[in-house]
Length: 147
Image 1 (cartoon, helix red, strand yellow):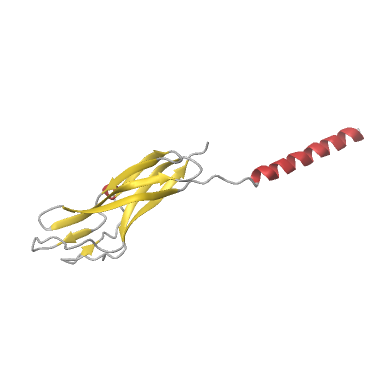
Image 2 (image 1 turned 30 degrees about the horizontal axis):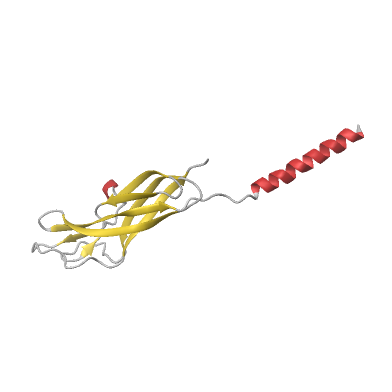
C-alpha cells in the first residue's frame, strides 16, 4: 500500500511539473504590418473631393490571421466642414472607409483599398492644391487562427 501511495504522489508531481512547463511556453502571436501605401485624390461631385487609399499589408507574425480590418486616418484634418479645407467625419468608419481581408497566412502579403479617408469641399469648384499632412494607414483589428 505504501508503494502505491508513493507512486501516485510521484506521478502527480510529474503531472504538475509538466503542466507548469506547458503553461510557461511562449505564446504565438499574430502581427500585421503595412508594407505599401498610396493616397490619391478623386473628385466625388462637382464641389467635392475625397482621398482614397490603396496599398499592401503583410502578416509577419507567427500564426495565420483572419478578419484583418484596414482603415485610414487624417490626423491633421479638421472635424468641422469648412470650405477649402480638408476634413474628416467624426463618426464611426463606414464600410467604404475600410477594407477587410478575410484570411492572411504567415508571410503572405495582400492588397487593400478603400475610399473617403478625408473630404474636401469648395463652392468655387476649384480642387485642393495638395494632400493634407499626417495621412496614416492603420490595422484596426484582426483575429489569430489557432492551429
